[in-house]
Every structure is written in structure tokens, then in C-alpha cells.
Amino acid sequence: MAKAARARQLGKRFLMFDHMLVVAGFYLVFPIIGLHFVGQLQWAAAAVGLALGVRQMSQQGLALFGGSLSDRFGAKPMIVAGMLLRALGFAVMAFAANPAVLLLSCVLSGLGGALFDPARAALVAKLTRPAQRPRFYALLMVQESVAAVTGALLGTMLLGLNFQWVALGGCAVFVLAALANQLLLPAYRAAPPGTSALAAMRTPLRDRPFLLLVLTLSGYYILTVQLMLLVPVTLTPAGRARQLHGVEPVRACPGRLVRLHRRRLAAGLEPRRAHARPALAGAGRHRPADAVRACFPRRAAARRQQGVMRKKRARQRRAENTLVGCRIVLRQAGLESLQSSPG
Image: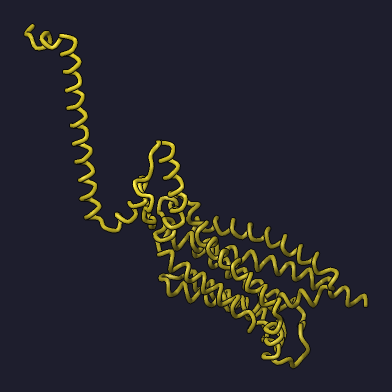
């Protein structure tokens, strides 16, 4: 009994060490992808976002298959193979010269995660008793936060040298984690020997509350990909100056409309039309219709010229009216003759 308890304790300590390596290696690379490929290399944000989305889908979407393989062949082989596959993905990413190579590297990284992540989660359930499990998961979450911040800071420092250092650094971390699992992790099995892969997949698919939880968490993963792509780019001076086409105008449009109507109310003006057309991406400062006019540059230029001419004629009319008014006042005061006399 004491030997089994000691084995559990050593297994939990190793899982915490392994979790720290995996999280630090992940956040060493992925938050820097948008900063490098979009912010520095000026690649299209849609292409980089597609690669990150495919990585997320290949890992979380195929985790069911990875978990069934873990039940069939054991946790250790899947963990080691998955970490080596992710290391290979990072190595390919270090030399990505076009979006297709970046997409390939993200797919390899996601497939690696689909292999080792379910196996590691199954080991947590195997090595902890039900009463200890909430506390252990809380420790893992705290450790994950610290490792994520540390990995991102280290990746930012390495980016000052070269992005290849960032990607190869993540590759080295996962190679180290694979070696540690191969040498130190016992051959645990989370399921009875001989469990069929199809039988292992049927169990979660029949659990409706679990499927509802997975569907709910899919929104979280969508937001994670968006934040991982946009936040590092928009927080840099280059990212703030380079408003991402198709992303920033749409995001800023509602706020611009609110500020537009606030300015009109403050100036005591009313919109010319109560049924103004909705503003598109890139709404102007003065009227929501400027966004529509921006789609037709020649027509917009002609209308701007007409507006300039209208303003000029209005100024001339105001000057003429002012001159006429002054003459009337002078005539009434009897001073017009004095104004017109020489000397």
C-alpha cells in the first residue's frame, strides 16, 4: 500500500514537471506567430489565422481519436510520439517561407497535441483519487498560468534575435519533454488491456452532458485563436499603425457610430436622414454614408468637389448679405455720403 502511494506521489510530481514543460514550450511559440508573420513579415492575417485555426481543429477535433489510441496502446507511446510530432512541427515552422509551409507545421503540431494531450489527461485521472482531484487540477491551472507567462516572455526575448530561435527553442523543449517521458514515465494504462479503439470512442459520444460541455468550450477555443493572433499584433507600434484590413474597421465600426451621434447631439445637429443607411467597414468621421462612398472613389471625389463649391458659394452669399446689411445701416445713419466722399 505504501509503495503504491509513493508511486502515485512520484507520478503526480512528474506530471506537474511535464505539464510545465508542455505549456512553456507551447506559449514560447504560438503567441509569437502572429507577431512575426503578420507584424514583421506583413503576411495576410487571414492566412495566419487559418493556420492557427487548423492547428486548433486538428488537436481538439482529433483528440477523441488520440484518446482511443491511448486506451488501445497505452499512454506512454502516445505521449512520446505526440511530443516528437509537435517538435517536428516547430522545426518546420522555423523555416516557413510561405503560408503553405506554416499551415503544414501547424497541422503537425496539432496532430502531436491530439496524441499526447488526452493521454496526459487520462494519467491525471489515474494517479489521483477522486477527493484529491480538484486540488490537483487547481495546482495544474496555477502552474499553467505561470508557465504560459514565462514561455511568452522568453519567446518575445528570442524574437529580438530571430524567429528561428523561437521555433527551434519550442522544438527543443518538446524533445526534452519526450525524452523525460520515455525515461521516467512508467508504462501506465488508463484503460484495461485490449480495449477496442471504437469502444473507447463510443463512451464519450453517448454522454450527452459531456458533449454539451464540449460544444460550450468550442467558443472558448475560437476566442483563444483570435486573441492569440490579434493581441500580440495590435499591441505593437507596427500593428497599431497597420490597421488589419477586414478586421479593425469592422471591429471599430460600432464605436465610431456611437461617437458620431454623440458629436451630433453635442453640436445641436440632427441627422439629415432618420433612415440613414448602415455604415460599412471603414466608417468616416462625419457621416455613416462616407463608408458607402468610400467604395466608389470617383463618385466620392466628385461629391467632395461639389461640397467644396457649395461651401464656397455659401461663404460668398454670407459676405454679400453682410455688405448689404452694412450699407443699410450706414444709409439709415446718414453716413453713406461721408463714406463715399473723397478724403
